[in-house]
Amino acid sequence: MGRRDKGLAGESATFLCVVMTLFGIVLILLGEVWLKQGIARQLVQSFGVVVTSVFVVSLLYEKFLAEKHLAEYKRLFDRLLTNLNTIQSKCMKLGIDAAFETRRECEERYPLSALIDMAKEGSEFYCVARSMHFFLNKTQAVQEGLNKGLQFKLACTDDSKETWNKVVAGLTFLQIHDINSALDALRNIVHWAVKNDSEGSIEVRFHKLHLPDTALLIETDDGVLVIWDLSFGRDVDHKKVLVLKEGPGGLGDDLADRYLGIWEHSEKRFEMKRGEIVLDKLGFAAEDEGTGTVHDMN
Image 1 (cartoon, helix red, strand yellow):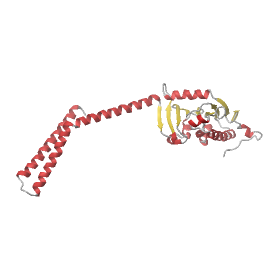
Image 2: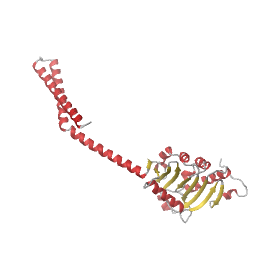
Image 3: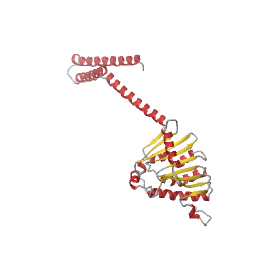
Image 4: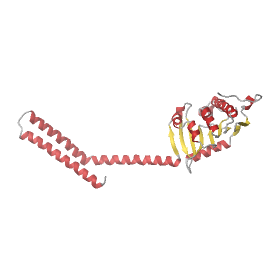
């Protein structure tokens, strides 16, 4: 609405208030002069007082307060829009595609099976984590990825006595049985992959960092997707998750560089390619020596 339209609307409202105020005064005078004592006179005068009071107040508000309140509301609304545009533009610049208050919410929208589906066939799928517990215990999804030919690059905290620090581990909410549970799940996945000659590969490395977070790097048709999981407690509701896309100058690029660096400097402990174990410092292959078979996890 232009200034001319706003002016016409304001003049119309003022004119209506004046007319209705005069109408109320006329009713009061009519009751006083023309009507005799009785209920009719009281009703007319009372109605006239109400009409006059309402529209006099409206006229005063219109003249002295409405524009002030409207201007203040407009300033607040403009400030809100500016802040929203700033936050949105910053998120876009940083490559933030989605943010979740809990891991539970993230898994509802981005379950591991969906991420496996999004990954390009035969591409590298990185998981640089604290324990890999949440990742490897989703056995069926990992098996689907192996059948798809994905190359899983997995890294977790070294559980050796030289590395393990209970105080630091406590601050990161990590327990050693989380790692053991993940390795148990990995053992079953490896047995299944060897038996079924899966197309994909698994490489496991151990790092010596007590990370407070986990990152998944997935190569999709639209570029690399980064899932950044920040831990503030052991429960899934104490995890905050950002989903980012790689892009020049974005947070996704920075995180990908960081976690790929951790991966590169971690110690290789296990590797399996196309159903064949080529490196085993975890003792998975030794369980099947002399039998020529593998154990079906099912």
